[in-house]
Image (cartoon, rainbow, N blue to C red; front, side):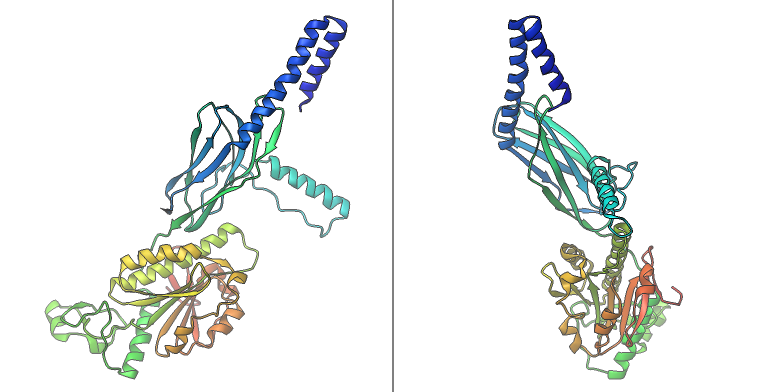
Length: 431
């Protein structure tokens, strides 16, 4: 109830007592009755109101999407003012670029109890009143129509599961004298698909992996077995440094005047496994920096798998699914990879505690002694390194470039870094 309204009541009361009683009674009755009617109509509208938020199922990075706010009511009474905050997390561009971010929450450390309480009250007031970069305040209304839609444009930024929510929803009466909180928080998620980079076959990591498995092939000299993407016949491809010389078709190479490799034998990367570790680093890191690092890992891992698929090299992709269990998937072509990219993002990166019961490596990989493993991780500390040292063969640990100094390398592996432009370089070496 506003101060102005109380002053108006006092004036009407004085008018009734000292000037004209009948007109004063009518004025006073009107001033009392109308807010009562207003609040009753507001309560009816509040009870019969339904608020929903709709987003597309998925969208590509750097794409514009619409968040649709739907208001539905079952009463013909007009809806008063509805105020709410639309919040979009760091997977999206900021909603208010010119707004200042909220200062850090005060702590008791270094403050007396009285100072802490004053600072905390001030911080709560700022959080309630200050316009924030990731929050858009809305004031909506509708007449006698029973449905209404409002569209808000959002721009996707990082791949992953983006979250959009409506909170602090309050309804006020027609005179804006009373505000009531609607105890409903509407929340939806949007799956933002990654951009798979076009990695080159002459990259240092690809050459290193090819050489490692080719050497392993020549040592074991196993009996040829044909993979799903390598049918017996006369299929050939261009030679890539690291391919076994035994697979070069010298006769065809002399005709083409460049080296050609047969694809009717076991291919060099048939025993390559790629693991995406979705454990988040528990260090205090700005959210945008964390999402950028995680995106680098996801997109570079998918780019490496796409490179293998493009050259007919089947690989195995392993990652923790949404249920927190290891999932393995054989990648034979680019279409399979695009489908699996959506599936792996449904779980995505999570706090390390959520995957604490999960072993560092899928148990099936521990039995593949002749394979080579690429392990992509944003949480490659000493604990992760200890879990990887039990792997029986060669291991490549891949981390974001900015996490290199916090990474521990297992004795059986080497450290490779993902740069912001999705290049792969060896730690201490050249691209």
